[in-house]
Amino acid sequence: MNSAEIRKRWLDFFESGNRQGLNHAVVPSASLILNDPNLLLVNAGMVPFKPYFLGELPPPYPRATSVQKCVRTLDIDEVGKTTRHASFFQMCGNFSFGDYFKEGAISLAWELLTRSQSDGGFGFDPARLWVTVYLDDDEAADIWHKQVGVPKDRIQRRGMADNFWSMGVPGPCGPCSEIYFDRGPEYGRDGGPVADEDRYLEIWNLVFMQNLRGDGPGKEGYPILGELPAKNIDTGLGLERTAALLQGVDNIYEIDTTSIILRKASELTGVAYGLEEKSDVSLRVIADHARTAAMLIGDGVTPGNEGRGYVLRRMMRRVVRNMRILGSAEPTLVELIKSSIEAMSPQYPELRSDRERIEAVTANEEGTFLETLRSGTNIFDLAAESMKKSGAKVLPATDLFMLHDTYGFPFDLTLEMATEKGLAVDEAGFRQLMREQKERAKADAKAKKSGHTDLSEYRKILESGKSSEFIGYQSTSGEASILAIVSDGQSVQG
Figure (cartoon, rainbow, N blue to C red):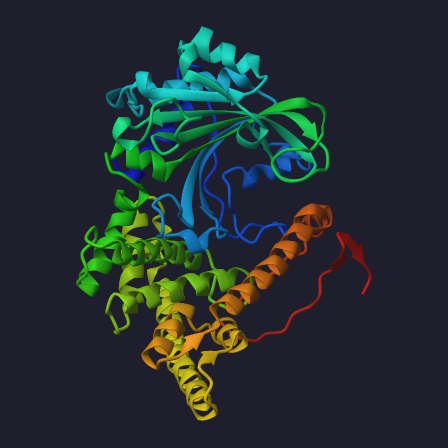
């Protein structure tokens, strides 16, 4: 079952195809760039529905379903090193705003997962499905066992870190129930999800939003202040992970929408996938980042040195760098983006109609980076020559950091070139500077997150009839008038 078919079955089931009679409004995927100052990019399926869960806006429907494009960048350095991490994914979700609750969410999930494929379901074997519930959520455990029929020995209880959800800030929260598929003994040890989450693969998370949390750290340790007056449902099923199971492949890099790009990279470099781990890592990075880049450019992100633009630029440059590692010195990024559009356009046809612009942005960025590589090489050569004259043997951490952070020069390329010239590098010092930079970024993100900007003033501006038009695709300059000034969430006079 290809990814486009999985997406279609999901939406059809929740729109009108379930036996519970719980018809949902189909909500198209929001752009990866959402009108939310708290987020760089949409990173979860429930993000477009946050105003309804937070009570900022009344929901226009009691029930909704979507397949949301998402990008997560916290683990970008792990992409490719494992087959679990990916920067782009699609989250299938069904949502209830004060309508059905635990019984409805559980019965809907079980029906779609276990209904035969010939009858519009996903056709999972019920005997291979396990579930987890929060420690004291007897209600969910009873529904799974007494109403659905899951044996007690396949229902496991887990603590707050695993089976309790919140947005990370004071507000709505609640226990979760997760559904896992047993891939078999060849993937790990027996004992259910608590024993081995490689063998028992999580495919669906049901969040029962019933409580209000207070301030506190991390995933656990914060106070639960009470129950919400209206209880909500927020669920998420990873489309790519589900595709891997339904397509009978080992991981998300081998499903239809990723393997197309991976095969193109192999074709362009002459390096086959599956022969050697080092080259496999590069091919996985290329496949993941090229697809993410196509989706970001399609939603209007352009490469730059800050914010979303930096995320995109970094991914595109990682693609170019890994293609060069595999031996391809020629410009290839446009070809990989073409494959990404081919892979994703059955689900997002706007990519095909916008391909000319997407490819133009790609070609320009690749040309800029190739020039950066030439410039960085010249800077490195000058530094190496200076060290040779002074008798120094170790390239300082500050020079390494400047090449990487200021000029976008890949660190692994610096290592490679230093080795060729018989020089050592202060890698420990470089890593320390990188950690300090990351901590500064985390602190800034945490400050923004805990502040949880009030969006009401922004909405008042829009509702007053004032609007703005982005003309950056047509021209580089223009005249504009200030509509309003908002400082710390409050409108101020200019």
